[in-house]
Image (cartoon, rainbow, N blue to C red; front, side):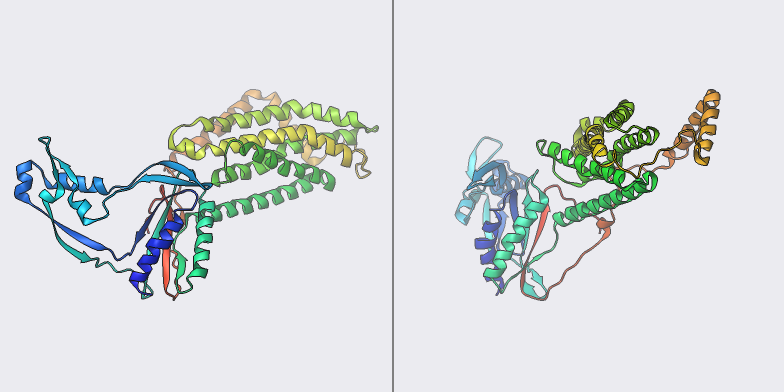
Length: 433
């Protein structure tokens, strides 16, 4: 297939097909063989009308400009509505109206003449074969992953219809997004696994470990139910908030189940009242602790500007997860404790007056702190000042952390005749290579 045939397919089939993708803003192509017009300005005529070359250039550019004006739903597909230029022939080009500084109106052909029409000298080749590059721009708010999937599905259909042409994806923002999301999910799962191991080591009871682990999926499920009506998607920020919350959402449940366990080993008559009493003892403490943490992150949601738009999903997701964990800790955890732990024979009665070595050391340190309150406060203040003075002045400051992905160049070469295309979003930036 020669370049002319490829140009015709791109213009008549591929570009119109891409315009049906939901969330597409516009399509650009490069590598097409198009005619080039050489225009010659008449200096004397321009002087007579008080015009300069910049004025004429601005008029031509304005007549050829294509601008978006909104969106329209057609056959269930949201399409961008654009005002396109009607300059589709030499006659229309010559009859562009030009306004002079004196208020007169003249036609472009009165001051400009078409000197020559030549074929484009630009040649696009990939592995020695004719190729055309197509850039797809998505609208703001469109999901990058879904946008890329729709484009991939469309190119897969064309590959079957045109076996002599191969579609090659050069760059996709969705790959970076998907890779980051997969990494975040993986690290979150590893964090949950390590947390469960730590719980099992310290509680030494498999049933109580299972009860605490229930708080993770329940809290995340409630968080997702809150995110849905707020139109918050799963992205780097929301998954980051969930990853941080994975460790924190178990804290309230651990406090509740540990206090329930302590009360059960102390009492000889085990009943539902023991679980209620143990939960009530720590309910106010875990509530104040959770609300304090939420109070730290929640104000970030009210930050304005570009940073606010970027980070707002993070505090909302994290706050929702923490509040959900509090609700789970004071409702679901006691219920599960009654079902799985209350009648367990593995819980033996313990002498509360027996003190171990670790507990004895802690009691000594606690007693010293209570007897020397001023010294304790001074030591805490000194540690705070030293930690701030020794770290903050030496930390570098920048808008966003540097990414190793910006320094990588990925090339995929397939030795076949191909049409390659590129996707980018409007807000994409060119990184230094």
